[in-house]
Length: 348
Image (tube, rainbow, N blue to C red):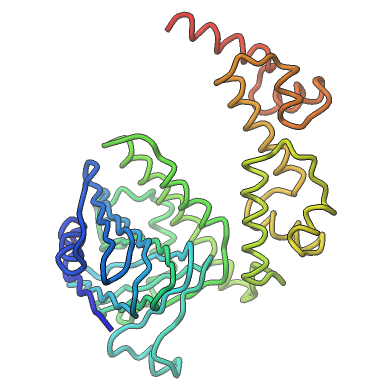
């Protein structure tokens, strides 16, 4: 098994160390560093960006040709790591930790759609990526989150962290949560950012702060009721729901029905609704209606189609109904929205 050792809190130095070990090429966008490799080790991308107040973000999107280990030395900073697996599975353990003895096993698996919170003391953490498995792992790192007076973390979020982790003084934090699709959807927004430089950095920081709040809420919920927030849904069923969600996002104009979606997903109606509530906090019907509005807005902004044509194109048959739901969201009629777009175009 190959082992990459990262011994610095610096994102730039960590990416450079990974590049020296793996080979490949490093590019940068402002303070973000991006390592890409395609060689005997495997293929993939490792990204990292430092943010304010001891906050940083790394993402592994990799597939190694043999089992591959990454060890992280926290130095004296006692960081906390919030991890989420967007794809695949990864194994984690602390070196020489009591946790390994208490659990009766050497490592814990972080599965797809699962969240974990680790760290809290000077304990070297190991991540193991299995051979030939596509893994996309997001890691939010907070150095001295409880002690840093310079932290830009919102006060309420910082206080929540203090309350949750104060009892772990002197021993590492190791929490592996249950599945949470909404955290994954939140982190996926980072790859959709088109802005560059400082604007991109600020947008990422906002997404990460919201993600941390969701992680804390998820942990609290698990600790309070100690039952699976995903209910009866399996990981396979969650994947099916995610796939049908993507299809609806791409083609909201299709005349979906609960029955047709259930047949496509292989799920019961109750499990389908449960999954959409978990992933999108919406019923299936609300989600479809929302995506039709999203497509309608794009058509208004990017085409010369009239409102009646847009109504038909997004899969609706009633212009009055479309106007009603459009106005509920955008606080104006579709025609007014379109006229305002034209007026802005003329002045531009």
